[in-house]
Image (cartoon, rainbow, N blue to C red; front, side):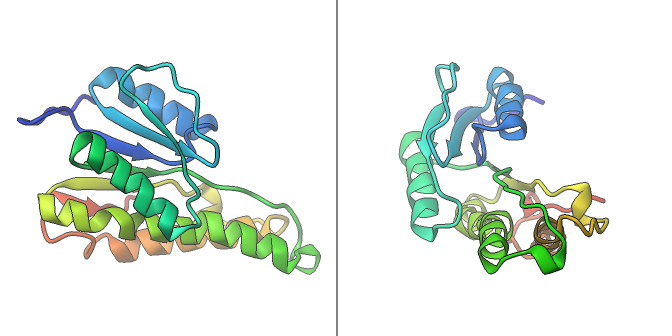
Length: 179
């Protein structure tokens, strides 16, 4: 899993890093030579010495600018983005409030869009990079009692497929989709 470059170790920005999957991603990357910028609504508490921990709201384009800017200021590049941040609300369609819908779509779907947009320019300029958008089985199979979560994860799957061929000008810098 270690990736080496001529200039320095690779840099990954990981959202949702205070939670289970995001924390696990950081735990795998850190000892394998990656410089990690770990983000969540409240800055994650990571013990690894080289990891930068930031408070970051994935629903805010300004927060994305600050997170990517911090990674660039500290490491001069972003080689990977792992979009993990996500929330869920359970409920059948007739039980789902507009507030629940908006909250889930804002984090799970729009947050991923903001992330792809925030790093793709830097990756295109560098001619390298990878974006990993974490979806779910709910992005492939409908679960009627989790309508907002399912809709947002289907959207992440579609967004990633749509962005994959155009997120970069280089075949080595892209948002990749894998079934």
